[in-house]
Length: 348
Image 1 (cartoon, rainbow, N blue to C red):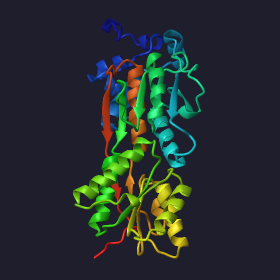
Image 2: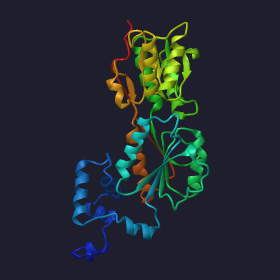
Image 3: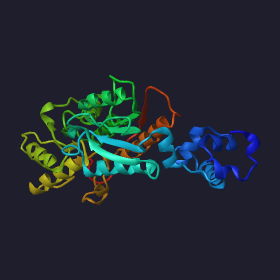
Image 4: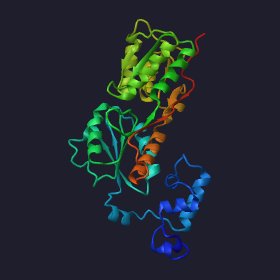
């Protein structure tokens, strides 16, 4: 911008101030300004307030209609999830939507689709999507990722490591979270522990079992694979798996469930058998869904940052769309944490 005309009070009513102009005024990077305007948690409130003050003073506006004409943009972002049927819980879906919407609301519309439901990729075109966020749970999504890259559409993949393509990924520590949960069970004196796994073709299920096994290995315990049961991340599969566990000749004293829905189903099966949690069998879940703190007993579980993962993915995607992030690939890891409640008994 020509500094000689900045003093003209009419200038900003003729030409909209840009993000780069605000950055120059405040002597910060345009990335900082963009993230401030997007209310990113990575930016301090003080900086956000300074950016907002300048933006309001000079009447900054994204001017979506004009930019669409000039840049031939759709101002539509595609949010794709591996599947919207079995394996994707309502809570997981809600947190994903909420996180993305926090960042893009008022700037872009969001189209939500399931990769598994796509008959073909005829509408995966740059004229339809300015960018795509993929909440990926399965390697089956790789064909879709390849199509998006071939079309030159900016993409950020969340929830799963990608090895065959150069893409930016935002990941939660599934392995680390299940390790913490299993180590806690072992530290409470349990030595015979069963696991209800998630869907075998989901990467999250694989990672969580790896953390479960690593905790056993580090504690010097040998895990018996007859104590492993496969679920589908839903209530019914947790219930059925727990019924099978209760039929074992050697019954475990604790069960690690690869998500909270399956933990809830397992607790129902335990109660119907006349047993009590945690006095007879301890239960640990994964995800820290809203209802877990209101169960009786309240469920010990792993807090997985799905909403934060979605926000970070959306932030990075907007920066790619605006040309502020030109990196081919990077991996961003978000920590999981153990939430200790009342569903694990200490064995002395």
